Length: 314
Image (cartoon, rainbow, N blue to C red; front, side, top):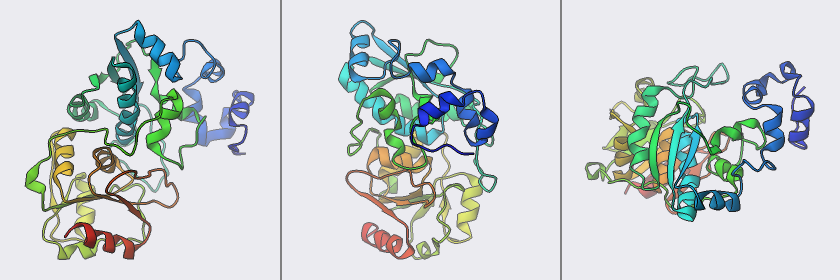
């Protein structure tokens, strides 16, 4: 038996004790108890509307939120946090929960293996997140009082296999992020001004796409992990690999490049937040990333990818 999206909350509550029948949803359900389902949109303690958030911030100088990853989801969540800061002016502290289990189809892999976030990833994320003027703290969660639970999108109250990841936290808070505008600001690394930067995770690949045509371009760099680079180098032998110590440096490279190409992965989330010229490889089964605003492009088909690169990499 599987869930139908219609009347989803009622079905979750009705079948809450019958978890084994819903293995696909088991991790999400077990992280939220029945009372939380019932109270999320009605409980007075929930900061889930603009009015409640503003009222809280009139008597509090900071707002604590938490998130447990994936890293790309965190970057997309920053769009909503920026909007909250603009509405309230308060300091926002982002606490990242470590070692939440990751559920993936067996044919997919991820650099962090079976968890969504570890301390090394927090250490690499923090310089980029802290460089944003609307974030005051970014560190591992260690029991701090939390005012907004950004993880609640995993309760399955909203669909996460389609639509737009960048809107998830807006749906939880009632705050509408301005996704057509940049929500990340960094100093561009001008050394990459004539470069095509590419990242292609092993998840969410459109298997009909062949990147070997990029061999004819002189300056192409890869900004993903080693296994992904070795895989892409089979198609693009002249591909260079750029390694970074933290994700602020990665963002600076992406901000400085001529065009960025990526699939539905963490580096593309950065490119989307920066609003650089960008091309998204869509994964037809889970198309839940939607480029918005200036310089935004996406594709399903090979001919369109090659045409877009030709237009943007001149």
